[in-house]
Length: 109
Ligand SMILES: [Zn+2]
Image (cartoon, rainbow, N blue to C red; front, side):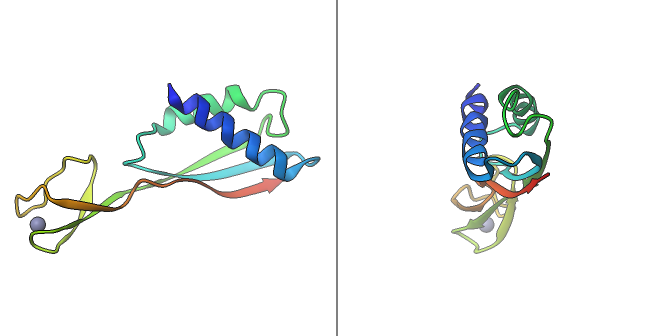
């Protein structure tokens, strides 16, 4: 479960920034192609924040859709996985979005 390590890092970064304030809400972006499950991130957030400045903070997750650009026909397509073909049948798609994993906003109390 690499989400645990990721969330642990995120909590450490936020804690260092807001100290000595407490955090009320954190909003993050997770791309559908980031290889991270939002439910798992929620679960790990509850574990990792225990006893920190983020204890009890709400975690809001913005899911960003995967987006690709087809090299064959030039279409911009939505991707749920890395192997979604373009409607033209091509699998040669450059991923242009959906790999995000970042903190958007941190709201202190
Ligand atoms: Zn295409």
